[in-house]
Amino acid sequence: MEKSIAIIGAGHMGTSLIGGLINDGHPADKIWAANPTPEKLSRLQQRFHIHTTTDNSVAAQAADIVILTVKPFIITTVTAELRPIIHARKSLVISAASGIRETSIQHSLGGNIPLVRAMPNVPALIGCGATALFANPFVTEDQHSAAESIFRAVGMVVWLEKEELMDTVTALSGCGPAYFFLVMEALQTAAEELGLPSETARLLTLQTGLGAARMALESHSTLAELRRSVASPGGSTERALSVLEEKNVRGLFKQALLAAKQRAEELATTVGEKK
View 1 (cartoon, rainbow, N blue to C red):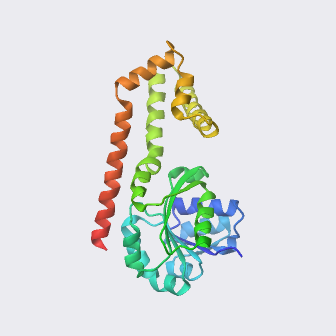
View 2 (tube, one colour):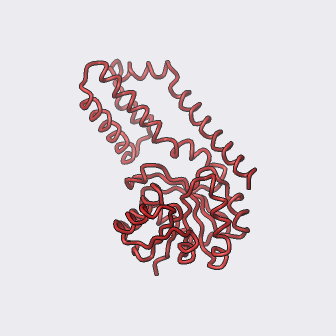
View 3 (tube, one colour):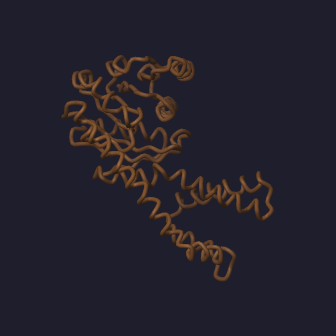
């Protein structure tokens, strides 16, 4: 029997999960969406034919799995509200709130709750997401599989054995789309300044990025091997790469990831202090 799922928040990420579940064959009558905006719920109901409500408790009361896609600063308020329902139903809780530790959520839920932390990223909106999951010791094998199935509906999934790695995941894949957008933006701008029409520069940049990513995913070669295969000795690519290496592009990316990781840790500490 299919699990009933409540998505609390049902904003952009919640909507992408609903769409992924529906496309994956999950019954619409087994999905609930809770959001404070009636107009948004009306659009979700018309598009997906799911159950909708402005009351988080109503959605949670009907669910085996409760997915929290609310903003991090209100998650402990929401979990405190749902605490008696989740305990009574023995629901699996999945939190997609960035930076909020398992211990903080457990504290507001009253403890001993099966909980999975999820760090999806923006491309989940088009079914191409990368999601890292971490399960606490109360999660059963069946719940483990259910959580993975939900996020596989919007992309690929990896499991983490240590929760502290979630901050690094946030810095890499959570923030990562913005890094790639910046790189592509810079390439397009440079090409335009060298004479290419804007739309031509844009299309060539995007297709090159897409092609490189697909090659890397489908190849058994390492990224370094793929890079070397494109850079012929004495050629244009080799010269371009030498400029990037001289400017320490690797070091800049490391600094960027470290800064993002530290900020994720700071945000988690702030929320933890307020619990």
